[in-house]
Image (cartoon, rainbow, N blue to C red):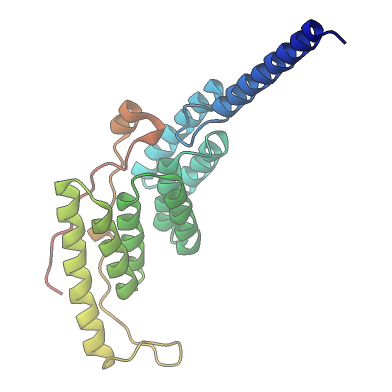
Length: 222
């Protein structure tokens, strides 16, 4: 084979390789990078509508319906950390703390801003009187960096949990309650950790928006 023909074959092979690499990059871009922008536009639009509906149900104190909508939204946009965080909150409001924690930890794996989610996890532990775990989660939230108002809220949560832990230790004599030796503790009302999802904020920020500001709990007499 002449050198000219060999050169043409080599150049043609290189061209085919370059085209293949370009096609691979295009496919990877369509697959998305974790924030929903690379997903199918129609699915992202559907996921957003379902998420908005879930937020409304959550605000209306209908966690069962909220869970159903968040699950559908997560199927259409599985990269949305915000959706899994709100799913965790819906499970939490329904009293299903096992699935709430699973959802929150799924959100942690999908977000670049875990401070908000650690705060949610801490609130979930607090509702179960798991004070040491709540304090650890709140401390982790502060390490992640938060806006000043949210940081103040987390510090307020920490103060409440420190007081609750002291009260628990006082009532139990330092012994951890067990099924064989139950101790009735003074539980805090859930309103201390009530969330108020802001639908308008989500619509403005899209699937990567952060959980809206929550009411800062106020310390009350025990």
